[in-house]
Length: 192
Image (cartoon, rainbow, N blue to C red):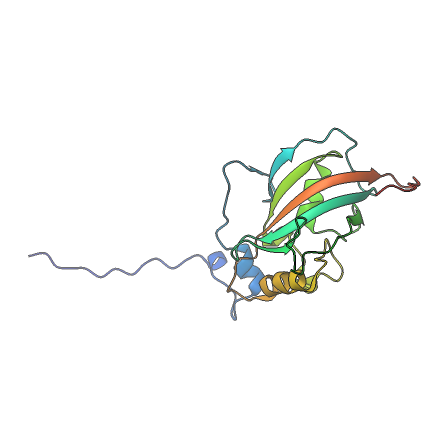
């Protein structure tokens, strides 16, 4: 007869264990990351796929960008928190303004800004943003950093995901279309 021998699994290295009390930033940073075969991953962990290559100017730090966008919570059933295609009777059925921000001013979600810096006007890109490149933990309600949901239901959906402790994956999907790049000092009249 053979005797069963109980063995103890090796303990993880200190860097693999959360600090006492389990810091949320440590938990978020050490979760397994989904990768998508048809997306390109950058060194930062951002994943993107170009749906359409743009042919216009490429933005640089200091440029003002005008962007059409939609956003989804990948880790929470793919729920939209901002949609371009409107659903009649929902919080998403109103015309929405295009998002405008200046590159390099810490007012754009870092992953979205990284994606925009690699695009040209007219380009459309799908961007998978990990928590490390997402809305900052001190601005989960998106008051300082955008793009921001334009509806109450969108705000609630995003806030629910971003403020849930360890319950929900905070990875986000953005679809961005770079509509225009304004260089510093340029005056644009009547452009949308």
